[in-house]
Length: 104
Image (cartoon, rainbow, N blue to C red; front, side):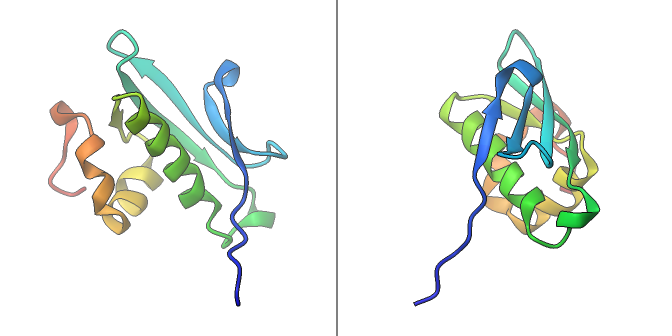
């Protein structure tokens, strides 16, 4: 039986990001609209960890966090808007309506 090796992603509220336990990969956010909208501004995965799906895991953690708190998402980061959302359309309902693009 194969087991999925899912990385542990932690919420670092003080640094406004979700990150891997070793702090090497992260997705950074800014809160807007009196704390009801989470703007995902930057995703970073070092080249030594490229291809492991970390960016996607980071996005899922951020979207799950937003969903559990009834936040909307602004996908400023190009990875989120151009790669993650097109591959994971089930999360589009969280995208802040005023910035929803037809390309997402």
